Structures are given as structure tokens and as C-alpha cells.
Length: 201
Ligand SMILES: Nc1nc2c(c(=O)[nH]1)N[C@H]1C(S)=C(S)[C@@H](COP(=O)(O)O)O[C@H]1N2
Ligand SMILES: [Mo]
Image (cartoon, rainbow, N blue to C red; front, side, top):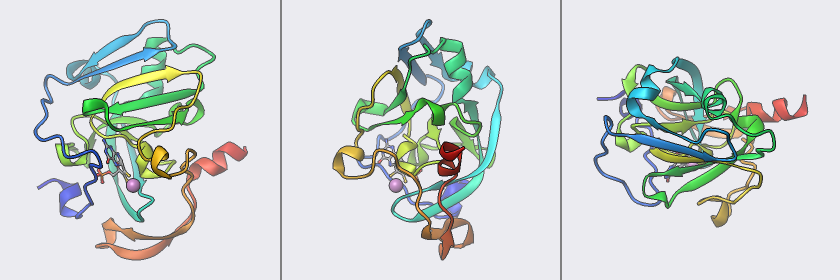
């Protein structure tokens, strides 16, 4: 059983579970405002330098799970495609392109912002957004789009799936109580997200 499953991490697929996905055949198309639009295959992503962020995914529905999320830094992808200087937002689409969400470029370039393919050393399964998902520890979990197939660099913001349904565009993590999945779902206080600190600097 995967570690995320063992921890009883909730599985969210607002648009419906995608079923079995083809890891070896996975591709992510990156385009929009960049010099070299590129499609990255599973093999190409795995060949890139791997980053591990020991960090938390925190949902606005008030659960949080911590572990070693492994994958490729989104900043490395931005560099490879040659993001234009006027890129303001990075938009992500999940498989079937019903679920989407976007974040400011300043967040996308941060150190622990990943295109993640593993958690605690296991490849991510479909339930948790495998083969490859966004992992954004800085903002509420709805910015961490699962099973990503397309990334678009843009000069403007478009509200995503949950943002159109009332979640904030900024997704700043607010201090409050969450169920900590690493502690068996114990309810405990958490501080506000790290990105707020960063934006104030
Ligand atoms: N495609 C897709 N991505 C998604 C969601 C979703 O419903 N569909 N839910 C988001 C929300 S609200 C959260 S908190 C996290 C939850 O990740 P998990 O299902 O791996 O626990 O995924 C995010 N990414
Ligand atoms: Mo969430």
C-alpha cells in the first residue's frame, strides 16, 4: 500500500476519478508565452534532476499531509521552455481538461514548487494525481492540480475549477485547525502558509 493511502489521505477528484492511467506513455504539453513550447514525456521528466521537498499539502477542507514529495522543479521546466519575461501566471490542466487552476509566476518559480511523481519514494498512483501532479506547499491544495497534461504560460489570470466555484484566487493558507494525516487525523492548529511571508519580503 502506498504511504499516502496508509496515512488515509483523502482522495479528491471533483471532476470524477480518471481510472487507470498510462505512466510510461504520460506526456505534459508546456506552451503559451515561451520561446520553446515543449512536450515532456514521462521518460524525459524522470531523466531531469530530481528534487525532493519534505513538505505539506494542505487542503482548504482542512486536512494536511506531509512527506517527501519528489519530482522536477517547475522552475527547471520554465527555464527549458524559455518563459517570456511578461509571463504573469502559470495555468495547469488535469487529465480530460475539466479541472484547471493557475498560480502567479512568482510562486511557480519557488524552490519547493514541483511537478511531482513520487511521495516517500513511491510513484504516485492515480488516486493521488499520478503519474505527475503539481505539488504546491505554499497555497491551498486546490492549486496542486492532479494528473497534469498541460501547462500554459500566460500574461493574465483565469479562475480555475474551484476558483469559479467560490474558492479564493490567491489560495493563501490561513492559520487554523487542520486534521494532520501524519498524526492519524488529529486536529491541530497550523500557521498560515509560507507564501504570505514570501510576498511580504
Ligand atoms: N484534477 C484534480 N486535481 C485536484 C483536485 C481535483 O478534484 N481534481 N482537488 C484539489 C484539492 S481541493 C486538493 S486539497 C488536492 C488533494 O489531493 P489528494 O486528492 O491527492 O489528497 O488536490 C487538488 N487537485
Ligand atoms: Mo482541497
